[in-house]
Amino acid sequence: MVSGWWLVVSSYSLNKFIIFYQEFILYTLYFILYTLYFIPYTLYLIPYTLYPLPSLVPFLPIFAAYSASLPQMYNKMSFKAIWANNTSYSKFLISVGIILLSAVFFTLVSTLLSSAIYGVNMAELQRLLGNLDDPRAISILKLVQTISAIGTFIVPPFIIAYLIDPQPLRFLGIDKFAGIPSSFLVIICLMVSVPLINFLGELNGTMHLPGFLKSVEDWMKDSEDRAAELTKAFLNMPTFGSMIFNVFMVALIPALGEELLFRGVVQKIFTGWAKNIHIGVWMSALLFSAMHMQFYGFVPRLLLGAMLGYLFVWSGSLWLSILAHFVNNAAAVIFTYLYQQNLSSIDVDAVGTQEGEMMSVLISTAFTAMLLFMIYRIESKKRLLSGE
Image (cartoon, rainbow, N blue to C red):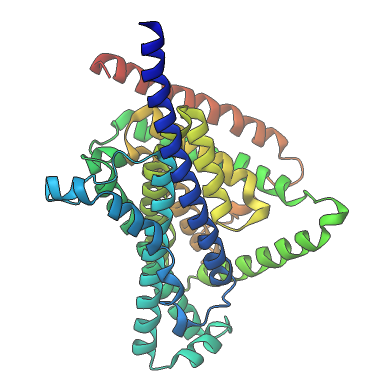
């Protein structure tokens, strides 16, 4: 009797291991293909005219997963949740494929649209975008940035959630709104945390890699300088209308898109994969910070990502994280505009970084921690009363 039971368990375990092994080999090969595709794409080595060609690569894991799901799809006559039973590993790689496909498609659309609106061909467009002193270049970059961000961060999470969960809105955490007390405290928390965030950014900027990695550090500095130059060009706001558009482009779209993607999808997948909430939060925060490709702001952005992740975990509502993200970005845009227009003497980026401001950094740290603890207590009590 015991030996028979052991044989059944062993057979089941062996079968699960074989399935996992096959999946691991299959998706690891696809991950290598992603890498071979994504590196030249990010380094702009793929010409605009060839964007559609490498974008076929992400179709491979999606096609494989789709083929494996055909019987289930025909039984249900629906694409909804066809990959619900896939492993977290395969869900993650399928998600990467969907994100890349959507990003390439929307980038291509934005490029063609820019070419049509401004009456330039692709070669002229590439030359124009290399000159940030040209007002047309900034306008085109803002158009491309807006459309690409929608296609990279907002559209894919809804597709992914629809394909891997029977209740997509609940999966993303947007089926319920955050409470007013927590929302109010989040706004205050983001405002008082400015000295702490700036101080950490300044501290991060003084870090250096070992001597044998000097070439890597030089590349990081060059990337950082280019990003800073582009950010400065974007945040040049001579009119009130340009400020409003920047709030839309720099605050609203990233707040919605990045939270849907990193907290709504990536954090959920990693939490299910590791069976640990904290690993899910910190892994998504790590990817969130790395994605920005601004290495000297990596630490504060990592901590901000973790805070946004825990706000989602505590409240169960992604809207609280979206609000926090929006306030963080919108405040930077609005205060920069006020400073540029001489309506404020405060340079918000310098708060907490000047000599003799350590006390303000310590006060900021204490109040930030206290406010986060208050939010945690409010949301914990709410969950207890609702029986969640």
